[in-house]
Picture: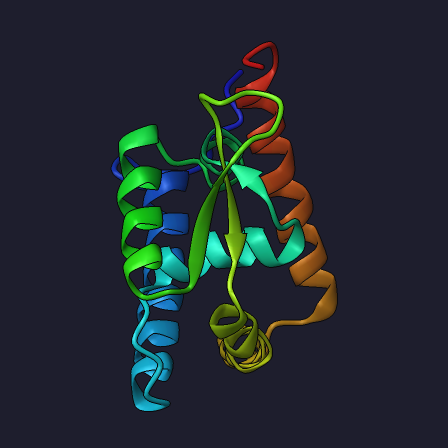
Length: 150
């Protein structure tokens, strides 16, 4: 018997998509109010590079769940903003490694604090137990759909 307890038209992706979009819009608004002129998509690329600098564009695709053209466009725009630089790999000339610049490092603490503040605002009134359960359920959904995909 299916475990789907939603009424017709209610899908996980619809519910999680609405929440994700609302969170991204609020964070974008908070960036704009603080005078930070980067998009949420650009910030997400920087986020992965702050965690591990010097990733290839392919690694960024995998970690950010984006396709190659999207990552290329994002890296191009971040490069124009002088927030990242491409460096040819010493091991494979076909690969460029992406590194954050000093300017990007200066944005890290402020934008991460804003992201945490926005997330806290979004989760206001939600118990820690509910948050943990939601994370577990969404992880299980993700795992179910990605078995054997890699």
